[in-house]
Image (cartoon, rainbow over the protein chains, first blue to last red):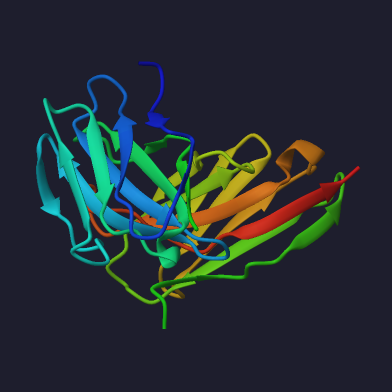
Length: 114
Length: 111
């Protein structure tokens, strides 16, 4: 596609429920990144995919968070047993593997846990 | 201490002013430096990109990197109301490394 597409754009969920956030990167971009942005905080790195493998998942805050990427394209970030502190905007970005300069971001999924 | 520090603002300037946005960082391994602009409820978009020390100019925007001081700046000349956004500095150690972002500075340009 022309840009990075994320869905849903907004998600309200009850505490304790599981949620899945989807990212559809730019066609041909082999690198995919998930970041989290909380109010008043910067972008917090969560996980990086190169193709279908995740060489860096150091930013996942707990084992309730997991992500996968299939076919070198679409990625899903899953949060199990959501907590109120998980409320944030989850941003996905993609880039060409050998491109030095920055990423192209999607508009994010705004997650609210009530 | 965070790896990348940035004054959160908010910064409010009149239209036409010169704006100076700054970041400091602690890790001397950073070599690639970026500035992103983020409008409300949108994802960040890449504004400027520089490698190592020096200046880079693109229209009304100038990015400066001083690696000896671990200090980077973004200057906006003839600021416009459409420049009102949050500006995030960002950096990485190698071309294949993940990008580390500063917390962002909120800028308002008043007509």
